[in-house]
Length: 315
Picture 1 (cartoon, rainbow, N blue to C red):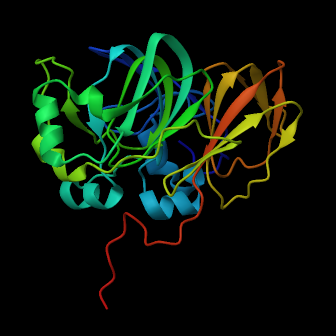
Picture 2 (picture 1 turned 120 degrees about the horizontal axis):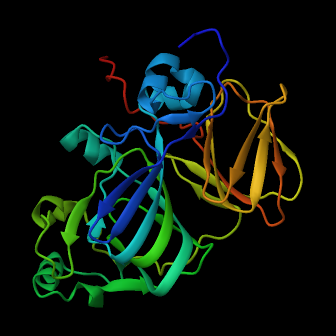
């Protein structure tokens, strides 16, 4: 791979994995056990980890590289949930780094479609004692303690570290920190998978959660781990990124769009497509090709805190 040629937008092959509850369809991920392979752009045939190892901040921008090094910072996947997922909890970055030498996980769930029994379980309805939760897990009564949300297509919910969560009969787009570090707390009576309840007990936020409501506005998430904007693309939109700024990931949730470079190269997105725009490919137009086109734009904004990958400096 040449160091001289400027990077261009990339699409990646799908990596579909089966689970008892349905499928996880990875569209963009650098996780080791999943390593997305480029299938569009001149780097086609190279994995995301190889691209990161070679081009570094040219792919992700200076902010992301300072924090994450050669790890691509976010993942994008679809969850086709036919049954019900296990009840999980994710650690925060600090705990994950200290205990597991890994990143924690913050995630955005965007509801693509819903079955007749669609439900999201998001946090506790009231303050819960740890012993009470343990008994509820043993007696298969956990559902009584949880908020149960009937989602609608187009809604979004933020899954924060410490929040117990599960989903049923729904197709979700998940945009998340580049980590799959989560702990299975309860499996609704199934006995064929390992439960991590004791290991994860001190990760759980047992306080009453805020009543789950869909995220409002076009800024869906602004977390230290990622920022997500919803773009209703009605007319051509010029990028305002700069060369030392963040990578961009576009996910088409409806309609169709084209990303056009000054050279005339065009990259098209239809519903469910994912496109990675490297940091240095900052000059482009987004053009709607169908009415009702909606894109989600994912980026990493600057953070004031100490980075996650450098060794501490001794004073």
